[in-house]
Amino acid sequence: MRTITAALIMIAMSLPVFAQNKVEYPIVKIKGEYMLIGQKVYKMISGCKEFEEGDVVTFSEDPITCETVTALDVTDLKECKLECLENMELPPDPE
Image (cartoon, rainbow, N blue to C red; front, side, top):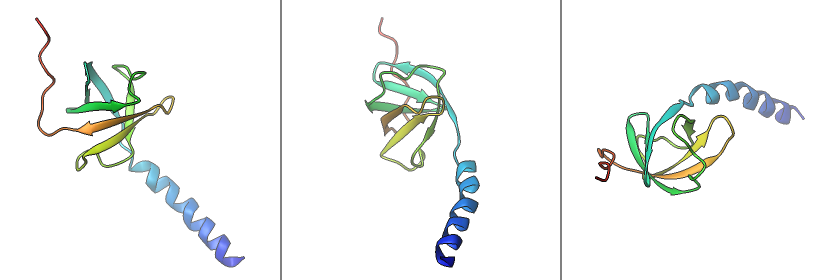
């Protein structure tokens, strides 16, 4: 019983620390299959149709060192799978 109690106390103490590590980013622009979140461009893979410019998201993984990442809308918990792109700008508007 003491082991279970100690484990529950350790989990409860770590929750606030975990929550503090989640950084929130605004969706600045959505263009075709690309999404500008903060200052980085991502390619939408799946589940992104309901996301809109101005939504605020956090990431399930580190968005800096990733190949793919899941964005989570902080308001209604929608999820969107994204491909991380390196040093890419949004494509130009069609003329």
